[in-house]
Image (cartoon, rainbow, N blue to C red; front, side, top):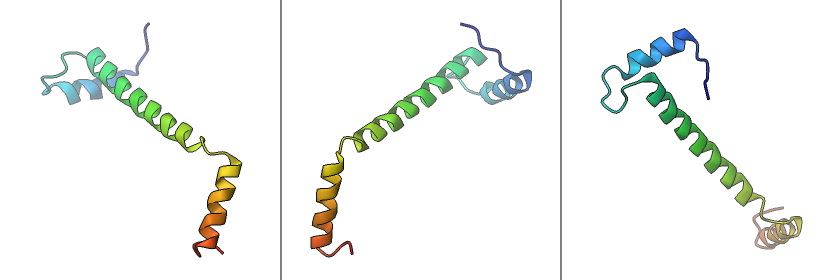
Length: 73
């Protein structure tokens, strides 16, 4: 797959990686950054999914319990 990247961005990336031993090409750096971003997005999505595992009934029970303990009015 080919992705077009604006020349200005390519030049910024080249400048950024010129003193880095880990990256010998713009492609390698872009690949690394995209993997990092996708990993974070997947982790955020996992957190969102975990939050949605409680039903409305569960939420109601928790609110009732917090109210009985004096944490909610």
